[in-house]
Length: 156
Image (cartoon, rainbow, N blue to C red):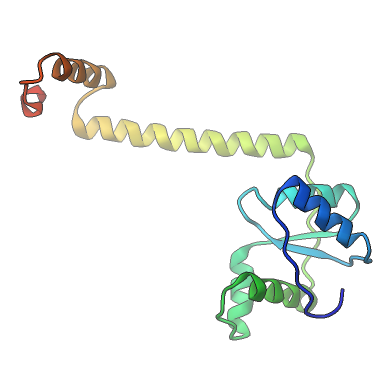
């Protein structure tokens, strides 16, 4: 690609097809992208399967690199330029492709962590309020039946 060439595409299956079609006209030395939750995987996985060398970099690394170059502007176009400059200057290590089983296991572990955190939050809330969920159901139904009951009178 010529220097400073930028273009945009949507992060949809159709947009990724368009990008891959465009990249097929070039001999891609490295495709560098930031980690974006799980959104970067929708591009990384088809690139891995086509043999395109993929380099997935943490956003904080890219921002630190930009700050070291005194680049403070933050826009899609400037981010693309910084990532390209980072790729040429730092030559990061290629990210190995991960098998679907490994990705699934990591996703399940992340979800388990989220569920455990939510459980802890709920248990802490119950401890502070001093009431179990059954208590809330009973209080809500009593309020509904007898609309003259003050919510304060339900606290025991």
